[in-house]
Amino acid sequence: MKAAPIQPDFTHEDAALARGALIVAGVDEVGRGPLAGPVTAAAVVLNPNRIPEGLRDSKRLTARARTTLAATIEDMAIASSVAHASVDEIDALNILQASHLAMRRALVGLSPPADHALIDGNRLPGDLPCPAETLVKGDARCLSIAAASILAKVARDRIMAELARDWPGYGWERNAGYPAPTHLAALKRLGVTPHHRRSFAPVRNILCEEN
Image (cartoon, rainbow, N blue to C red; front, side, top):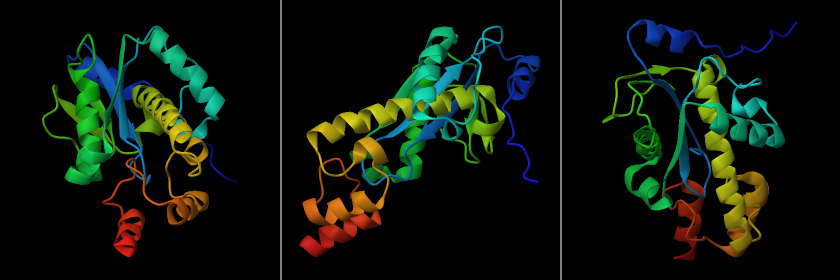
């Protein structure tokens, strides 16, 4: 029998608070895999007395549920912030460093500022504005990171839907810039846009063919 999915809880936030932290933020990013668009990060400081119901890894939620929860998170959280790293920054820095840049920007954008951060993943970004720790699969285990994953996903999906109106044919309103078959076919048919990541192999290969 398949095991039930892990449900995120407030254990890691409570542990940080017990060690003396006063404002603990969860941080997550979305958009490392797409061929187009920014990488987006969010930071969220949940109120332990007002945690929205239904928080979980954004990948386990429908688009409608994510949108509804994002509004609730922004309304009930002590603080939240969303930030991005652009396509140019992704190409200049590489996707890992660009995602870390977006995380730093999200943390810096919090008001009040966090004094401890829980970062999804196994690599700690440098130059963070507060002490932090990583948490592998944090979006599935930690409520604050789950909340951040939802805000980041909803914000980035909106950006890609807006870009899709200006650049029709690539299906970004459905694939969010990921290398879906329709997106790859459109790249070959329509060519590379200013919003494509030129450092990513499928895009770079098409540019090489054109040259």
